[in-house]
Image 1 (cartoon, rainbow, N blue to C red):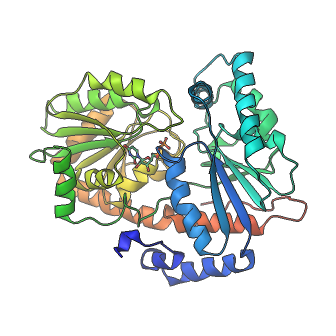
Image 2: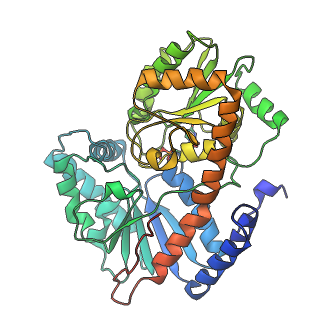
Image 3: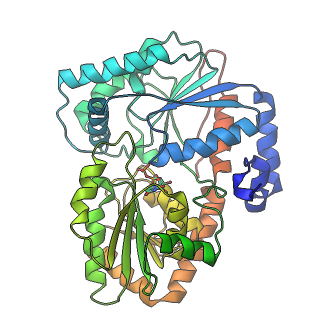
Length: 411
Ligand code: UDP
């Protein structure tokens, strides 16, 4: 069986994180053996949450912690409401009518009836399934894991959601700056990546060439790449404008690769709207191909993640792991991932992004310096073993009253 078709276990991480860390994790997992945990979110693919859950659930099962993953179902109407809520949590002001709230809560009620949760720990991801907590006689701790950039949520939407959030036993957010005024204890876990997945595993040059050729991506000029769902918060228009400014100084090819998650009804519209910029040196692709993500991030000279809001950019960590200098928007979680000028660049405008593209394309040594540091910072802070250990500590800290006695270390 090929190495990448093997179920990865925590022991496989030894080469990256050392034997001591692996030993420590195994030891922490031992008393939690047979704990039954369930995760609930709203899509199997497309976007960071599904990416995380697919690796995380397998690793936890490898430790003997029975960790499941359920998906809620909903009509396009439902997902257009939940996308509005998502946008509002990232700061857009919206008008959530009573009719929309009723439909949102009703679909979640239906999902709750057909989802039987009697696990030792229930982890609900993001706002889509949030109200499920209203429909269960809670016999165990329920945790709300919110992956969104909560630095400036729309007040009204937040106040509406708070009635559900405060029923949870704990809330996990991706960064301390997202902490809100809440009765519920708040913990902070940054997401992390799986270095063994098809998206992140080592590729040789032929494998990279094969993928790029398959999509007719020219490699005669340096590649500037952004991989992101087609979502306005990822600022694809800004990336194109920055690229157009940069190419006045240095020639290159831009590749925007995106996908559309099943719970994101705005994706197609955003994709259609950026398509008008397509030309010989601006390649815009919409497809779900993890090996292509890997190949592009590896072959790119410059990777962008020019988000306007970002809870945490998995794509940033993925590209940094491949030794790339990433130019990230100076927002949300990206600020915890990139240290400006040390392992990448943080930018606040199109002009700044253009200037950094030019600088990086002209300076191989700078690319290599930032890329080396980037890889090392992911190895230290953003591999899945770190997040797993936080979950293990959390599970061990649950008291019989469901009180959670966990404090996020100051890292
Ligand atoms: N992704 C992908 N194909 C695409 C675009 C994105 O596989 O065309 C993946 C990307 O590699 C990453 C995840 O989707 O693993 C996006 O996570 P991120 O945290 O960057 O953003 P989110 O979509 O959760 O806002």
